Structure formats: structure tokens, C-alpha cells
Image (cartoon, rainbow, N blue to C red; front, top):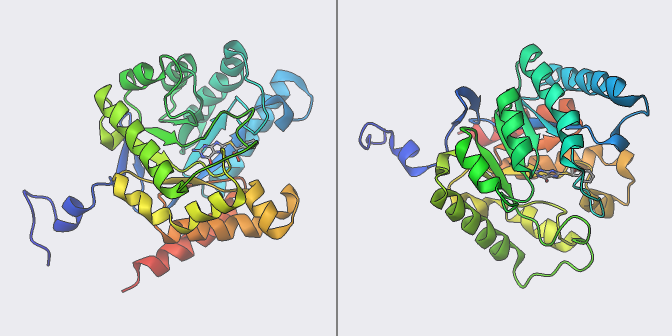
Length: 294
Ligand code: 7PM
């Protein structure tokens, strides 16, 4: 048996990633890969029935994802798709906050909010969100300070450029090295701002300022990101990298998305974002079982 180091087992001392993430007092178990169900509340993601229907539809979708095994529901009110224009803050708040309140009261899952705006972070955490997912990695004005005030974990994602223009000419000399360096620097900034490392997660940001070759290199070498000592989050579901490999439209990317999720989980990804929760949960349970075998 490994010898305990100051009361911690040798393995726990060696692997600094927390197995249980403290989300403002609520535990999130990351000992096995967790599925984060994607809940888009952007206007284009719902039928044109106005605010009330959009809320009902989103709530129903969240319930279904939790029933299918999602441990986290990621609510995004600002479209971060390539070419998207920013959403005004009042609009983002009106879309996201009532849902956070309702989901927190009625569902057992952790609630994550996909936002870059400090005001939305504060309101979401006050409404019961347990996680902040920021595709700008807290680079927006005031975001670092807001996250430092709030006692919730933050996912720092890599993006080259900005959503409107990032897919024009992505360029790297060594994509894995550069994404790693960026995330290491963001972790250092967070620690300087008073956010401890055990409240951070990182994500290489598939599709955010990357060509197909860049995305595939990052997926192949995902295990290099364990050097950062924080849990890894991965979002590949339905992305254009799957479409490019399979020559498939968005509706035809499920099996490719699940395969990419397995490749990530096999290399130790802690959280996988997914649109189709049930197939992803089953594939990751199988992956974890094989990973844990002697
Ligand atoms: C349209 C195109 C709508 C792309 C939404 C998207 C990630 C994320 C997104 C990710 C983390 C999507 C993206 N992608 N957050 N938010 N990691 N942490 O496919 O890869 O959901 S938005």
C-alpha cells in the first residue's frame, strides 16, 4: 500500500486534481467522468413562442437531461458560436436567471452558467448556480474580480481570437503547447486574484479558433493537460470537427460526438459537455469501467 503523506494517501498527494469539487458547499463528484448537458437559451435555440414558452421548453429539456444521467446542466444565454454577435446583459439575465432559480429548486443536478459577464456570474450564483463556465477564461472586464468574490469553481476555456472572427485564420506553431501555456497563464492570473487552484477547471476549447487539424491534435494529446493539475472539461458534441471528419450535418454527428467523448474520457477528462446525454453517459460509464480495470 502507498505510504500516507501527512494523512493524505500517496495517490491523492500525487494527483492534485480534486475528486470532489466544492461548488459553493454542494459537492460535485468527479471521480468518474461527469456529463454536462447543454441547455441553450439563445433565441435561435427555441420555437418562436416568446419568453414563457422558451422557459417551459428549456425546463423540460433540462429535466430530460437529468433523467438521462447529466450531473451538470450548463445554461448558455449568450451565443458563442463562430460569427455570433454579443447579447445585451439585460437580455442574457432575463433568459438565464429564472431558469437557474427553477432548476436549483426542482432538480438534483449542479447548475453551470456559460457566461463571460461579471453581472451574470453574480446573479447566477445568487440564484443557485454552482459553477461558472467562461469561454473567455475571465478575460472580460471585472470577470476575474467577480469570480474571486464568488465561492464557485470556474471553467477556464481557451479561445484564439473572438467568436465573430475566430474561425477566419486560426494559426499556431504548436497548438498543444500554446493552449497549455495560455491556460497555465490564466490559472496564474486567477491565483493572483485570489481564486485558489482547487476552484479551477480548464478546457482546450474545441472549435474556438482552431482548424480541424488543431482540434484533432488537441484531442489526441488531451492527457498533456493534466500537467496543469486541475480537472479537464471537454466540449466536442456536434462540433464542426465531427462534421468535417464524417462529412455529416449537425443532425448526423451523434456517434462521432460520442466517440470523441470516449477518446477524451479515456485520457482522463473529468467533465464532458454533451447535447445527447443518454448515449454519452453510457459510453463514458463503459470507458470508466475499462479505465478502472486492473
Ligand atoms: C453554436 C456553436 C452554439 C457552438 C454553441 C456552440 C464550449 C463551451 C460552447 C466548450 C466549454 C457548443 C458551442 N462550447 N464551454 N461553450 N467548452 N467549457 O457547442 O467546448 O456548445 S458553445
